[in-house]
Length: 121
Image (cartoon, rainbow, N blue to C red; front, side, top):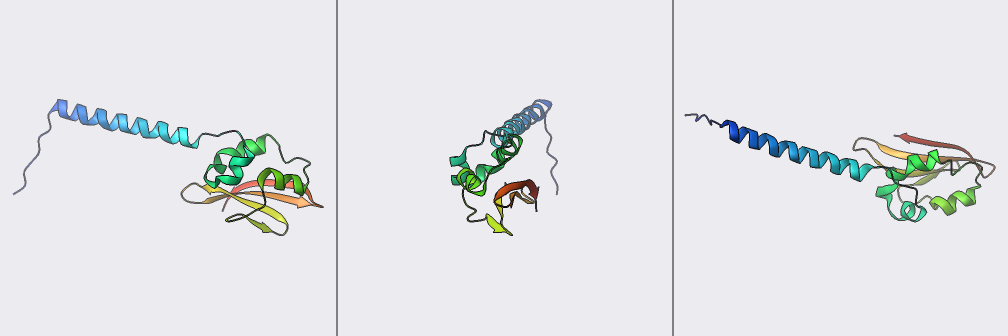
């Protein structure tokens, strides 16, 4: 035997309000936690999970333009952990969007920055 649950209008209104409030809080929380932040060399080197919030500003500020390899190493650190070096280019892991990993690739020609690329894998 199946019992049918009857919801009153006030109960439905209360449930709808609670769901709306929770969704709003989660939405604002997500926006707050993923908002861009200013580039901080120390935070970049010590907190891999914050890199995605800094990378677009880092590129927009053109901090790499004309830099030598040693200057990039001072700014971002040597690639380590999930970062790596490929054909002399430094490739830094900047996080994941839940589907793809995202990478910052700094290319060098004659030990000077020749390209900067931010991409998913």
